[in-house]
Image 1 (cartoon, one colour):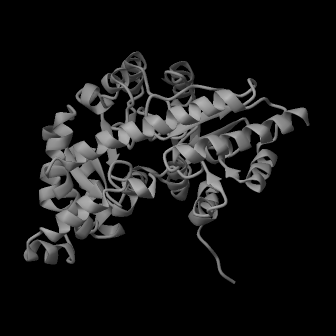
Image 2 (image 1 turned 90 degrees about the vertical axis):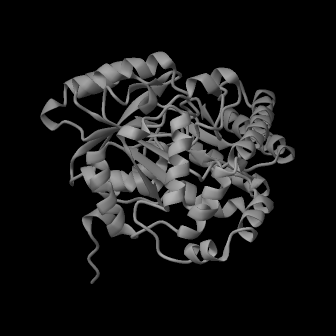
Image 3 (image 1 turned 180 degrees about the horizontal axis):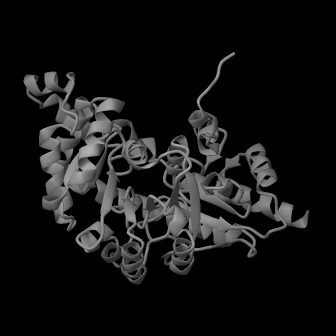
Length: 400
C-alpha cells in the first residue's frame, strides 16, 4: 500500500486549477483564470528579439545556467528595480522559476512542520498551497479597503508570543483576489508592528505595474523601497503578468543572509531557471520594449475593468457589494449570507459563465461569502454577456 508523506496529504486541490479547463471552452465565458489574454502577448517583438540574437547567445539559451540567474538579466533587473527605489545595493537578487517558486523557497527556508505564518485573508491561493506543503499553520488576518487590519494583526501577535509566527506574507499592490491597493498610511503603520514583534515581511508584488491612474501609480511604491532599512523584507516579483506566464520567471530581492539560504534551496529544486526565457526577457527589458508593452496593457486592462464594473452595476442586484479596483486583474464581491455560492457557480456554468468562489482564497478554506471575477483574460465583447448571465443567476438565487 502506498504511504504518502504528511506534507502532501495536507494539500487540497485548487478550485482555480480545476476550473482552468473551462477557460479554453469556447462556449464558456470565463472570469476564473487570473492570467493575461493570449491575444495580448508580444509575440512579434519576441520573434524579432530571437531572430536578431547572435548564434552564441542562442546556444547559451539551450544550456544550463548559473543558479542565481543569467548574469545580463540580473544586471538589467537590478537597474529596473533600482528605478523603483528598491535597495538593490544592500540586497541580493535571485531569479526564480516564477514567483511561486520564490514563495516555495521562502517556505522551505523558514517553515518547520506545525509552525505558524500569518497571511492576509483572503490570500493568494498559490501561497496557501505552498505554505501548507511545508505543513505550516496559517493564520489569516482580514483585509479592509486600506489593507490588512492592523488591530487584528497586532492583537493576534500579542497573544501568540509563545509561538511566534515565522513571517507575514502580504500582497500590497492590487491584491489577488481582493484587488486592494494598500494606503500609504496603512503601510507606514504596519512597520512598527513588524519591529515590535521582530517579524519578517514577505512582500509579493506581481501586479504593481498594472495601475490604472496616477493616484494609484503614486501609491504602488514597494514597502521594501520605503522601509527596507527599518525592518527585514523579502521582495518578490514576476514577469508573468507583465510579459507572459509561460516564461516562468520571477525574482526575489532579499537581505544577504536570506539570499544565501535561498540560493542553496534553489539549487536543490531545479538547479537554475531556463536560460532560454531569461535571455529573451533580458533583451525585452533592456531594449525598453517592456516599458512600452506594459503601458499598452494598462490601457487594455483598464478598459476591461471599466466594462466589467459598468456591467456589474447594470446587471447585479444591489445586495452584492464590491469595491472597484485601481489596477491589477480582479474584482472581489461579497454576497448576502443566505446565498450558496456553490449552487450559483454550478448554475452559472450551466448558463455559460464561470467565476471562483471565495473559499479558494481562505487559509481555512471555508469562506462562502465572496467570489472573484477576473477581467484580464476576457475581451470586452464577452464581459458584458458573462456578467449579465451571472447577474441573472444571482437574482434567481435571491428569489430562492
